[in-house]
Amino acid sequence: MIRELTRHIKEYKTSAIITPFLVLGEVLIEITIPFLISRLITEVMYGTEQSALLRYGLILAICALMSLTLGTLAGFSSAKASAGLAKNLRRALFENIQKFSFSNVDRFETSSLITRLTTDVEFVRQAFMLTIRTAIRAPFMLVFAFIMGFVIGGKLAWIFCFTVPILGFGLWRGIRTTLPLFKKLFRKYDKLNLAVQENVKGMRVVKSFVREKNEIKRFSAASEDLKQDFTRIERIIALLDPLMQFCLNVVMVVILSYGSYLVISTRGLDFDVGQISALLTYSFMMLMSLMMLSMVLAMLVMAQESGRRIVEVLNEESDLLNASNPRHEVADGSVVFDNVCFKYAKDAERFALENINLKIRSGEVIGVIGATGSAKSTLVQLIPRLYDVTSGAVLVGGVDVRDYDLETLRRSVAMVLQKNVLFSGTIAENLRWGDPNATDEMLQEACKMAQAHDFITRFPEGYDTFIEQGGSNVSGGQNQRICIARALLARPKVLILDDSTSAIDTQTDAKIRAALRSYIPETTKIIIAQRLASVQDADCIVVMNDGRIDAVGSHDELFYTNDIYREIYESQTRAEVLHGQ
Image 1 (cartoon, rainbow, N blue to C red):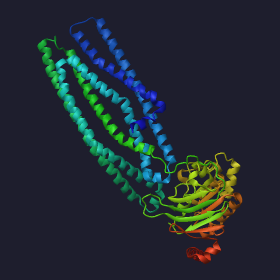
Image 2: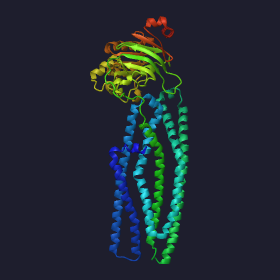
Image 3: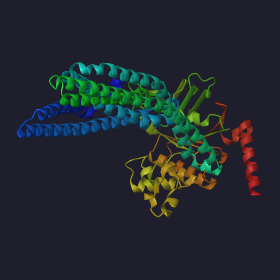
Image 4: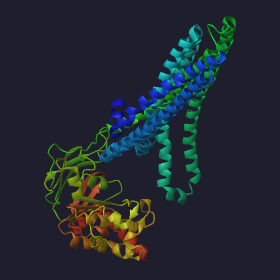
């Protein structure tokens, strides 16, 4: 895990390597200062010339300035290295997530991926910064202060051999107790993020059903659960502070009482006031180093779980991989389903699609209808290889989709969903997702075919109108028409409209279908719809039922031969008559 994480330091390696050396220099200087002060006190006690005092004062000032400089440089370099590591980790995580198939995303859940990209990366950043700075400083300070304590204090320094292990044991025990709690903590972070994500994304639904209080209650429950675990952790860590104070007080009492006795009894010949001062300073340094070390260990415990979760995503390989020698050209828009079976998870009890056999010629218009849950969308998602078949094969242009380069295949297959997404940016920027090099004239032509040009030009800013996040400032029908225009700009070999005119009136829907025939005649068009009017003039209509193809034929053929199709037709016809009355 550590090797995988540190691999992402990359261009910030120099800053990461320099920091420990700067810290080591800072520690050596800080360790020297109490020794120099003790010598100065001794000189003053026995009387000395002013020049000696000035010399000591100058040396101490230089030491303090050097310590400040090295500490500042170490702070800058550690901040640069840790922030750079966090940036690279976020980038690597995001890049790998972009390669995920839908099944990969389902395995992690969106809220968990967000937590790993934000909270987990932040914990690793903090731990790395503490590791290259404080985790170097604290042990060196502890060891050097311990050595200098014996050099200056002699047998009096043996008090450290009793207090340091006591405090060290307390720190070890606290870390060991909190480790399991930290592991639980991140799962609860995921739960909290899920509550926020679903609430913000579904804000209109929440308000329309007046469920604000329930959502607040749900969020509060997740927040309270997180608070309780944090409280338990903080209580354990809080016990370390009085333990440190106890050890520090014991050291002070022993040094001051026994040290004073030695000064008086030996009249300063074996032990003097300067040595007491230095010994007290070194004891503070040692105990503070232990406390800093405990902070580092606590952060490392938190970061250990965060690092594991980050590496888990970094090492996750997409279920959809390119073939060893992928095809980089799609010949035409013909589509063949050859005895296809599919289920979303390997251990799923039933197939979502079963025994699908279907041949679509390039340039045909195919309608797909069926009841809700009949796997219409699942069927078409296999064409651009958003999922892989469980058995059988899907062929586009006469080639198994698994033999294509993924980018090549998906550039040749455009999908417009019922709930397609517009991203923050102008209408023109959203349209150019279909073709980054499209001219303004090409944008307008595609929008005219999608019946979007008229309402776009009515906006004050026209094609430069800014689309809010998720397309919240345009209507559902406008959203769908912009998304259709975006797909047309891609000039795909296969165009899939997955109930993408559900928010559009029948007259506009008919105009769009007529335009599709003339604008991209060689493109295969697969239209999933609930309204029969949207597919009635298709070359062929596929009737889906419970994951199987129930019938294939024209409108007239299906009306007389297929019960499901006839029932849908008659129910919609009655609804139109009643609506007309």
